[in-house]
Image (cartoon, rainbow, N blue to C red; front, side, top):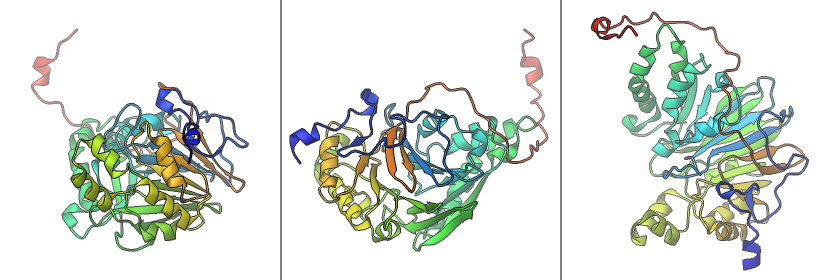
Amino acid sequence: MSVQKLNQVPEMAYLGGTQPLSLRPVGPGAYPERFLPGQEELRPDEMRVTILGSGDPNVTRAQASGSVLIEVGNEARDFFFFDLGSGCLANWKSLVLPAAGTTKVFLSHLHADHVGELPTLLGSFAKSGRWAPVEIWGGASDRPEWGFASFIEHMTNALAWDTASVAGFNANTGNEAIPHVVPYDSVEVVYERDGVTITSFPVIHALNGAVGYRIEFAGRSVVFSGDTTPCRFVVDAAQGCDLLIHECYLSPATAAVVMGKPLEIVEPLLKKAHTIPEQAGRVFAMAQPRMAALWHLPLNPAMGQILADAQQHFDGPIVASQDLTVFNVTPDAVVARQAEVDDHPNPVPGTPKTEMKLAPPNPEPAWWAAARLDV
């Protein structure tokens, strides 16, 4: 790929760019050039995918840690979180979606940069309009103490003070997490409701317990790899899908510089846990999605070269995800755009999906009476 072609990569969004990062045309098609939250109704046969967090553990104002939101055009207007990395919920808030609907989370694995916002979702959003419990799916483990069920139990215990503190004022049911354990070593349908089917599959990342997901609705399909090395299960799940969101990290040499670690330490780590751009391109070539997206990739000046390294193996369009990159998936096309959002939107509580049930308030500590100022 020529230097001239690489120079045609749009400017990154945090530097003022307004276009998705790609070497090929990816939008807007029949849509406006920018996605404006609250102004585009989903079609009954449409899925809308928004990157809430495109980055890695090094969370910045430009990149939240990993998270993807998928909305579907069913009657309930369901939406689903896939991972909840630190910083992602501020991006979700800018989409002006109802807090009452934040009830379904699918975790790929339990690294901190993929689960960091769970306390915010469970604790804070229960004070912002969600009365229903949050259902959370995640991978089992061959070591129960490392597994998803243990994680949710300890997370719930860690939020016990928060939950008790609002008894009598907020519905404590909104703080509840309902775990659904999925297998780490086999493919399984884990969700079938209201026209949406979600299938989990194993991936190769660090330890047993990491999974990816295939989401199907109205004949459309999106596959989310989570973190993984190149893996046969991803290719099988993504065959002919509409959109494949695949993790991609820097090349070992570049990553060593960014991480400040010797190449001989970084290279084995990447090969054990992640996928580099050329490998991602080969995975895309095997799966043949209508559109592919690189995700979990730190933004850097070499984005053009990264895209070129992946693109040399795959003829279809590839987008390097940024925060608030939006994909519209319909029978007609898969289109990528950048959202234009309000950084300080008004809250949208939404319509509660359950009856509000209050627990009895806790009695005030005795010493408060003497310490309270009557001002």
